[in-house]
Amino acid sequence: MRSIAPTAPPATRADLENLPEHVVGEIIEGVLYTFPRPHPRHVDIEGLLHDDLKSPFQRGRGGPGGWWILVEPGIELRGSPEVVPDLAGWRRERLPSLPDGPIPVVPDWLCEILSPSTRGHDQRIKRPLYARAGVSHLWFIDLDGRTLSASKLVGGRWLEIGVFGEGERVRAEPFEAIEIDTSEWWPAA
Image (cartoon, rainbow, N blue to C red; front, side, top):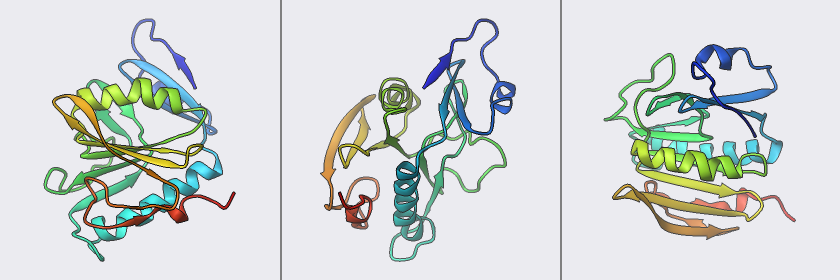
């Protein structure tokens, strides 16, 4: 991860648009952060979790429906014009339709997939930002530890509600209506 501290003025959307194709960027509180594109393991787990949640929660197949579940959406949070979580979810009563540009509504749930290049950024920069913005639930998937950590925001602080290991069946807020089998997430060692 590389950050470019703002001199004056803060980083803008134009800075994001000028990044090379192989670089992912986001602006958090005026600072442009850049990263290499995610590696295949990261992208695979991102897709698997999206598949696990989209059918029951977005489409209502085998679950309650009523959500938008998106991969790497651009979100506007607390003066940050472009934050890009790995996955995000909104209850449809709060976000009835999807906008064409960055989403200005705080997500109900976010998930970050921790990899060597993003672990520190996700935990030190984004986790506190998500709490300040009022995101209700936050999941971290640790690729190296093969774990899912689920937290919910209580009184402005993250309360850990569970850490689930490789191969466990998970019912974690806010998606406790279905069971997620994590055994498919991790390739055989």
